[in-house]
Image 1 (tube, rainbow, N blue to C red):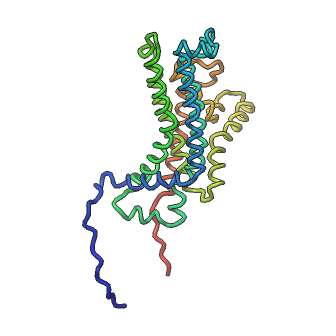
Image 2 (image 1 turned 135 degrees about the vertical axis):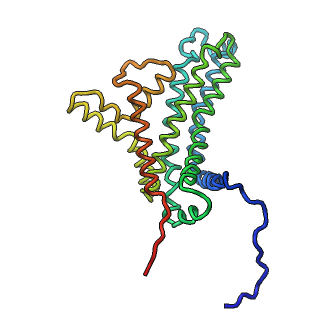
Length: 289
C-alpha cells in the first residue's frame, strides 16, 4: 500500500540518559498507583496517626495546652520517648501493609497480562532495572507514610522540648530509618512477587494480607507439635515487632527467639520473594507455526 503522507519525522528532542531511563517506568507506575480514589483515601488515612502524634507532641511540650486540657499531671501519658515512637511505628507500619495490599497488585500483573513486559525489556532496560523501577514506586509511597513523617515528628519533638532531648534520643532516628527500610523492602518484594503470579486484583490483595498473617498459624502448630518456640519465626508480625523493639531499645516481655533469628526469618522471606519474582519477570517470545 502506497504511503502518500510523508510528513512524519524522526524524534530529534532530548533523550533520557540510559542510566536513569528506568525512572520513566517509576514515574508512570506512580501515576497509575494513584489513579484510583481508593488509593488516595488509603494514603490519607495512613497519615492520620502522624497528624494526631504531632498534636500529642505539641500538647506534651506546651504548658498552656496542658493547662487548657487539664492534663498537668499526665506526664506519663504524654511522655515522648522511644516507647511513643515504637507504638507510632507499629501503627504506621501496619497501615502501610494495607496500602501495599491495594497498590501492589497493579505493579507487575498489568504488564504481564497485556504482554507489555517484552516491550520494556526490548529497550535498553534490564530485568534488574525493571524490578528496581517497580520497587522504587512502592518505596516512595511507603516512605511517605513511615519513616518520613516519623522523622519529621522526631525533629519537631527535638525542637519543642525544653530539656535536652535530641542527644539522648538520637538512636530513635536510626531505629526509624532501619526499621522502616526493612519493612518497606519486605512489603515491596512480597507485593511484586504476588503481582507477578496473580492477575486478579482482589485475590492478590487478599493474598498479600494472608502471606503476612497466615504463616503465624502454622508456626503455632509447629510450636505445639514439636514443643519448641522456633515456630515463632513463621510469625511475621512477631518477628517484626521483636526487631523493632530491639532497634528502639524497648525490651519485650515475651521474647521467645533471638533477634538475629528474627532478622534471618524476614530476610529469608524477602529473598524467596525476589527469587520468585526473578523467575516470572522475563521476556518471552511466542512463535506460532
